[in-house]
Length: 395
Ligand SMILES: Nc1nc2c(c(=O)[nH]1)N[C@H]1C(S)=C(S)[C@@H](COP(=O)(O)O)O[C@H]1N2
Ligand SMILES: [Mo]
Image (cartoon, rainbow, N blue to C red; front, top):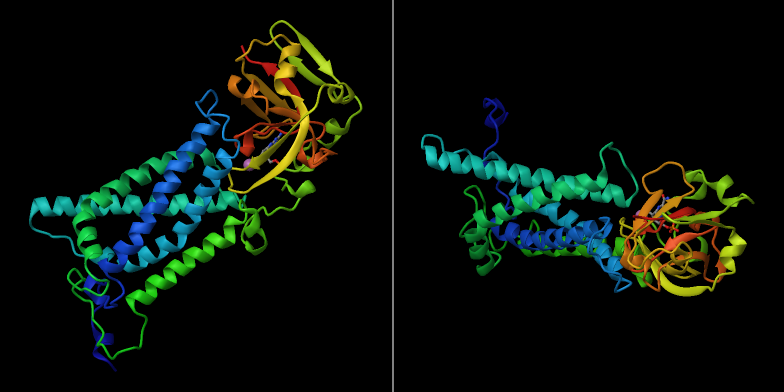
């Protein structure tokens, strides 16, 4: 048969990959947008981290701030998935480039560049995979998602900056040249004859890539953009749930059904000086405020609701908490990472921070936190503690 079959096997070489599409011209165009997505995801990720730090600088306004930044974070990460796949496909042959053996300095430079690419690819894949899994509430790992996703983000961005710095001349030149310019093409690339219409063009590949990005964004952005909800089949939380607000952890999953519905339920409010216990009827007898505020989950989904309840500051006053005091919120839930949160003084003192008893005029459903939950402006959903049993003024 063919001579090729009789040849001794050898690892592939860069020049074995002849596709005209696998070119720096395509890689730098896709890479540019991939870099933009990673940059946006990194910056919004830093903000999300800051918003969750106890005692951080995160402000209470605008009320939709976290909803916006975290929605953008998840959309940017989702858009990066098709971009990363196409980018890896275009540069794949480079994996088989032979190192410049013989001369030390070029060899060391080559080794450094390869190592930084290895780190970049590994961390980029890790960030997108863990981020997507988290948005789908699938945790096939035992490490802390937030701490790990945050730490690896710094490594990814470091490797990305090294990569951009090393490739800057190539990026510049390929972006200035026409898409079909072949100045920097790999040695094995076969330029198709003008009459040859067999395969996709570079332009066709790029168009398909942008389309895939658009589809991925539209299919997920409905988790946070109400008018996209009906078409966002991939949005994991999409407006189902009592009062149109999704339920993250249900009362049954949190194992609070008995304690939350018990006739002996009391809300305990404690400070160093004083402690009071209030029944639900007593809470309902306080002046009630209504605020339109979103639940904005770190997973990217968000939904706005009209919450009614007691101003947290009014409750802090009952135990003579000085203005500016932080308040620890403890749920009836006995275990689980989100059973507690700390409200910084700026949030406690804000007029819109409520211990909500009602949603859209109806008593809170058990799954939304009955008998009462925290709802505060511009706050990650994970800190909007449900089934509150105890408020402690932090000292
Ligand atoms: N006690 C308690 N409160 C909690 C949680 C929890 O698991 N336990 N989950 C939080 C998360 S991650 C989110 S996004 C919001 C969701 O509120 P919802 O289920 O009413 O939409 O509740 C928060 N409050
Ligand atoms: Mo959440």
